[in-house]
Amino acid sequence: MALSRAIEVNEAFRVVRDPVRRAEALLALAGVPVGETREPKPDQEFLMQVLEDREALEAAHEKRDPAAVAVVLGRAQKLRASAEEALAVALDGGGGPALAVPFLGRLRYAARFVEEARRAEEDLENP
Image 1 (cartoon, rainbow, N blue to C red):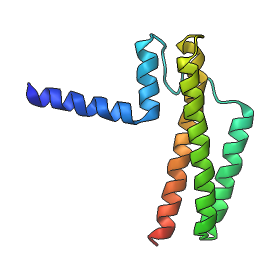
Image 2 (cartoon, rainbow, N blue to C red):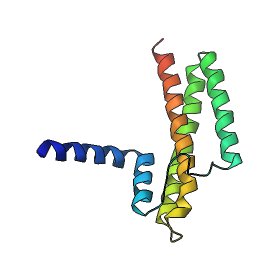
Image 3 (cartoon, rainbow, N blue to C red):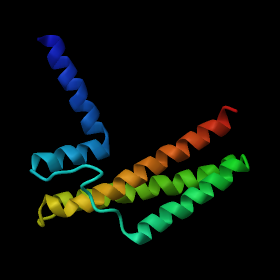
Image 4 (cartoon, rainbow, N blue to C red):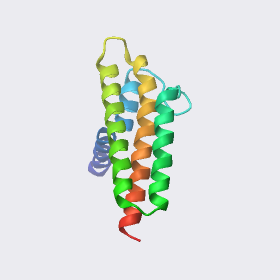
């Protein structure tokens, strides 16, 4: 029984630590169905920004330019931070949790992009 509880605590800690999983859990507790197939896609402006930054990341990685990759990683981290903040504001706002769902999609994109940029940075550090 103790082992079972320890597993539950560890899983809960992983959920709380990950902003996407934390938001999913909060929305699920509020009765809002979530999942990548249930969320609206982020707005065009956001998607264009991510697309342009991904192209910049790819170019920097192909040139093997760690400084340029670091710049893109910094932009990706700012994008993720702003998505987290927008989601937090939406969750804390009085409009109800359903209004936060579009921001969860934005956070998913931003979090994936940060991971891509980190992998590119690690690849250049460890040829």
